[in-house]
Image 1 (cartoon, rainbow, N blue to C red):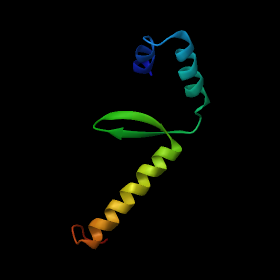
Image 2 (image 1 turned 180 degrees about the vertical axis):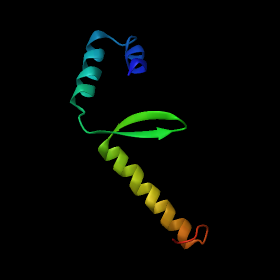
Image 3 (image 1 turned 120 degrees about the vertical axis):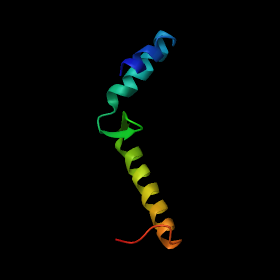
Length: 69
């Protein structure tokens, strides 16, 4: 969160207010870890990532790249 705060310091006060208001309205965040860094993302984004992952696994299974459990 501190990185977000540092990044918005270059914005105008009005833009800062918009960003902070948007952040405050997001209540259903989920955590994901990528390369050792934890990110908090909206649930719909997490669901999209999960869906894409399942589609990729299905394609790889059909191509014989992975074994079915």
